[in-house]
Amino acid sequence: MTQEQTYQLIAIILYMALLLYIGWYAYRRTASLTDYMLGGRSLGPLTTALSAGAADMSGWLLMALPGAIYLTGLAEAWMAIGLLMGAYMNWLIVAPRLRAYTAVNNTITIPSFLENRLGDTSRLLRIFSSIIILVFFTFYVSSGMVSGGKFFESSFSLNYHYGLLIVAAVVVAYTLFGGFLAVSYTDVVQGLIMFLSLILVPIVGLTLTGGISETIETIRQADATHLSLVKGVTFLGVISSLAWGLGYFGQPHIIVRFMAIKTIKETKRARLIGMSWMFLSLVGAAATALVGYAYFLQQGETLADHETIFIVLGQILFHPIISGVILAAVLSAVMSTISSQLIVTSSALIEDLYKVFDKKAHDEKHYVLLGRLAVLTVSIVAILLAWPNNESILELVSFAWAGFGSAFGPVILLSLYWRKITAKGAMAGMVTGAIVSFIWGSMEVLKSTIYEIVPGFALGMVITVIVSLITYEKNEAIDADFTEMKRHIKAAKK
Image (cartoon, rainbow, N blue to C red; front, side, top):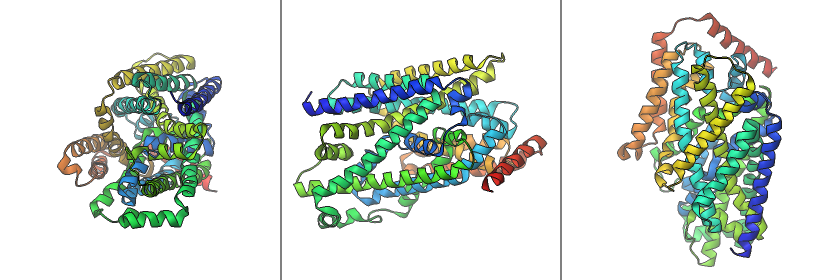
């Protein structure tokens, strides 16, 4: 290991030690299942906003997006624009009502919210939706662990399996013991590291490329289309990229943050913080790609792997300790998503499956212990799936964003805004959205035309409405909860 790598490793070790300390701190504040799964609904706007952002972005923000723009140009930014629009609408139309409604019907997970909201006495809706979460998020977590193993392999020439186990051990430790609070507080640290790194790298990088004007001129002379948002893109291509924003309405690990914020009023402040973080981070990612593109043009060199542009620039620009923090930013993106998905998967297992089939009453410590065991169990399965270092796991989770968005998105929106949605309508819509999204995404001839979330979301919405209209029967208790939710929203606006 070189001296530079030693310094970088020291920064990574300090970063991981901080995460473990936060996990211990959160452990001391966790007593009930609501604490473990939802932080006791005590999150402030800053924590909620940064936690949602860090859980959302993953390694895509620091590697895939800068790499795509570096390779192809700003035409790749349409997906970022779609995600920005979708995240804003999620904060605006979902966050306040979901916070109010889950307080009214006293639920701490998405499946239990849907069951109570729709009066599903069969419990099939809760079981089905929790199984979807359990299966997809297990693969999602496994994918993150694959990325973590590869991170240590490429950055420190460490054996892939050692890297995998290090990432898994740290994430599992603070998630298992500290629960939702640990996940949220570590997300704040990770979100800040990601944000500061994405701002710092392109700004300092401009000192090497001669400033903004010189950087733009260098790129323009080499390839003017690199700075164009529209060159080489099609109308359906733009729609497909923008449609990524639809996925936000159905992502359990993101919208669960809305349920945990302290008050409805604070969702407005959280929205401002969260969207500012996301906008500046996306701009920083795009700027990193363009500055890096100009730098290598000026040097007459070629970058071997375009997705490493953020890491390579950090190593060129800064002392190894600082570049170690840059590496920690990449690891932060991976680990924050893993931990968020672990806690949601744990809640699906205990709150939405175990409690359905176990009719005995237990104290809170019993359920918290089971929640921790669920985190451990899912983690072990994810490690086993990740152990072969199989790219097919990464490919499989490409369905998940569209699958969650198509299955849950329409049902969540209609549950919050339409009195007449029914349990049968929701079930039919979820099944339709998931199946259409999966089939469309599996067929290259269809997938190459338009992103599968478009037909999946649209048909899921239509089927939910049609079946709900056919099966609707007035229910006084459900109507009373809907009215009470609206009263809470109106009170929060005064």
